[in-house]
Image (cartoon, rainbow, N blue to C red):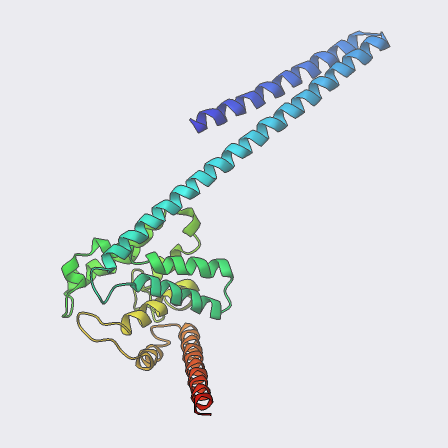
Amino acid sequence: MKKVKLLCNAGEVVRAVAISALAIALGAYAMMLQDNHFVVAILAAVVLLVAVGTILQVSRAIQQLHRQHEQSRQAALKAERHYFKVLRRIISAIESREPYTRGRSKRIGYLARKIGENLGLDSNLCRLLELAGQIHDIGLLSVPEYVLDKPSRLGREEFRSVKRHAEISYRILEPLTFLHEILPAIRYHHERMNGTGYPYGLKGDEIPLTARILAVADAYDAMTHDRPHRPALPTIEAINELKRCSPAGYDPQCVAALEELLNMKYLRRARQSKDKKETLQQQTLSTSA
């Protein structure tokens, strides 16, 4: 219906311009035939009025087209965000079924955003990184559950089905225009710096920085939480493993940014613990006095 209205408005613009052009042409022709200056002046005034009227009508029609376009854009954006929320709820519902996956996507999104901030990326891109982390594994819905929960090594066909999930995630999210800037991170977050990753075997700078950030956040969260085939690693061991796998697997810059974040978090907790201990000691001394 909105398209029909837009076409009607466009038709009004064309009609107004055509009438104006015809009036100007007739006026000019009449001026050429008249020797009477008074008649010429009247005709000139009529032509001017028609031209001004046409300009105003065209301007109003264009403004209306802009308003309708903006309304359509806002409606589409609202629908996209609703679609995104539905997908996020689906992921949350699936993750909540198993203790080792509960809250995983939110944690990865938070880590990805903090790494991006630590690397100096702009705030909007960091916000999109968080959204990407929350939704990046939606393509795993295409992988059979027994494969995801398998405690032993995956077979060739099983691993092939897992490898497709990044591309499937990209295809599911591709219609969302507000995510276009961050979609490469979702598509390439399993690529590795030496070209041994998937789905396309990209290496080094061929892999977008956002994808390298998401890869580190994803790997760290996986290592520090229990999985069907192994227990969680302590934070220090997980960081050391990421370092060991850099620069062949992970971007050392992203790993260093994550390590700095974790160190800051540890120092902040230590400081809070120390302040709390000192406060308790002071309260004890005051009570004794």
